Length: 369
Image 1 (spheres, helix red, strand yellow):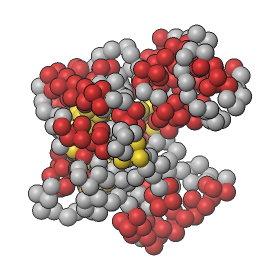
Image 2 (cartoon, helix red, strand yellow; image 1 turned 180 degrees about the vertical axis):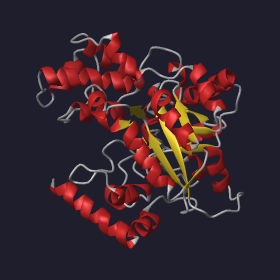
Image 3 (spheres, helix red, strand yellow; image 1 turned 90 degrees about the horizontal axis):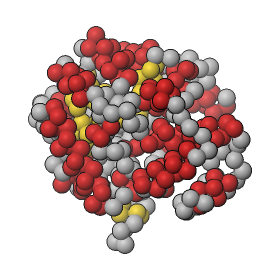
Image 4 (tube, rainbow, N blue to C red; image 1 turned 90 degrees about the vertical axis):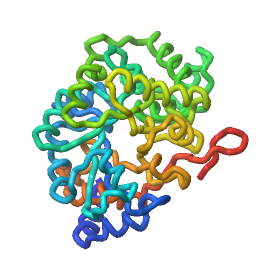
């Protein structure tokens, strides 16, 4: 409550004085030009947040009603543009200086088609969808969704003791340092950030020996079909790549990363008959090696979730602000325009900073930037 009250008061003061824009411009994204257009990111769009949050990672959800509230506020202050138009601005070729904003959706969940797409068409707002190509038109689900579901059920049955989860995984040959997480979400994040995807699949298999998930429970996590994506594209939306299988690129070998970024682009282009210029890093995780892989795969623009820019490839490390249902609520739980303003202008970056490691050391591992 105290933290929420401080955040609310700070946002109201910054927004009222216009300091949110100044703070964001001074302490916001570096590398390349500091005049970075606003790019907003979402994941799943659902009808009822509380109902969906019972089985989903809450911070990946936004209700259709809240999404509309965000879009209306942003639309009164910025001109919505497609990612191609945004790219023209970044290249310095549009000759304009009006404030612009682009809207993006990661992972390619089918509920984008059900809830976001009709709203965007109604309002005439261009947007982009970054898809995980191997999951399109399948009943497979993102590994982070399945992992979270299994961990949440395991935690609901009996909260784990310190070190217990890591110990149980060692029985299946999965060695990881102690997981200090107190919640299923924290445990999911720690595992995703620590393990390559093959090990994560083994974790899922191990957890499935203790509990199972019905197909009905998994249906809300299905991806779009190629037919849906073709209709979305024909309506003026941009289709971008989010790798083949949503690997955490900083945890994988160079060959695996190259296969993921190249294979995804080729598959989307073959299926939709259109070029793919835009790429979003899964979970926003990137380092110099993964940025180079994206460049070598022929993408023109790449999107992250933090303020760090790669000086050699600023157009491949464009920062985005990720929003969800509760990201712009005040301490009373009500929608707050000042907090949304601070989010959009990245004024909170000066406090939150970046916890990622973006530079690869000579030994091949990660080094703190």
